[in-house]
Structure formats: C-alpha cells, structure tokens
Length: 177
Image 1: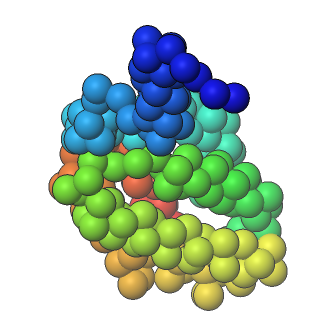
Image 2 (image 1 turned 180 degrees about the vertical axis):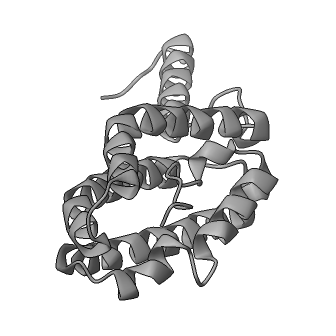
C-alpha cells in the first residue's frame, strides 16, 4: 500500500509507533514506579500469612489436643501424622504464594534468604511425616524442637525484615512433652 498524502503518512507512522510502544510495554511509568515498596510487600506477605493462620487453626487445635492427650507418645505421634501432612500442605501453599510475589528490587537478596531458609524448614517437616507415621518419637524429637535451628532462623530472618511473627512460628505448645 502506498500512502501519498503527508498527513496520512504521519498519522500512520504515529499509530505504528504507538502500537510498538504499547507492545513493548512502553508507557509513562518507569519500572521503578511499578515496583512494590517494602511496606506494600510486607503487607502482602502478612496477608498471606494471616490467611494461612486462619486455615490452620482447626489442624493446630487437633495437634495441640494430641500433645496434651494421654497415651503413649508413639501412638499420639502416629495420630498426628495426617495433621502434620495437612500442616505441611498449608505451609507449602503459603510459601509458594510468597515465592510468586515480586519483592522490592533492593530487598530481593534478603527475601531470597528468607524463602530459602523457610523452604529448608518446610523440607524438615516433610521429612518428619513418615517418621511420625511410624510413631518414632526418638527421631521426631529433633524436628519437633528445631534441633538444627532452621525454623528459628526463618523466624528471625522474617521478623527482622518486618513480617509478622505468625508467618514462621509453630503455634503448638510442646512444653508438655
């Protein structure tokens, strides 16, 4: 198609340029303006944590009841295994949602460390489920009491950044064990 009129040519070029700019994501906002701020990111993560806390309450009550119940530790641990699996699934979903969020650019390394440490603590829980199913309290104790400190590290890193403590703590009182 040949465009002979200068005004039509100019209009066509402007439309083409605008289309290219829109296709490339060009707009009046810079990437910096689109980035989430630290307070916004903390608010988003805390909302995910609060939702997970709510979803976890029934399971946590059942786990606490088993901790406080009578009977052998082994039998109570076996009964806890399905609830630990539920806890794992809820916590994994929470961590997956957090991983999918884009942190503020200058905080990415710090958040990566929080996520990595939280994933390690979650892996420990996952590895403890078969131990609980066997009722092997001796080998489960280290997981329950965070012997290597991974859960405590995740809590420290998260709360230092500004996340609510409930994002990382275990809401089960194990002191009666």
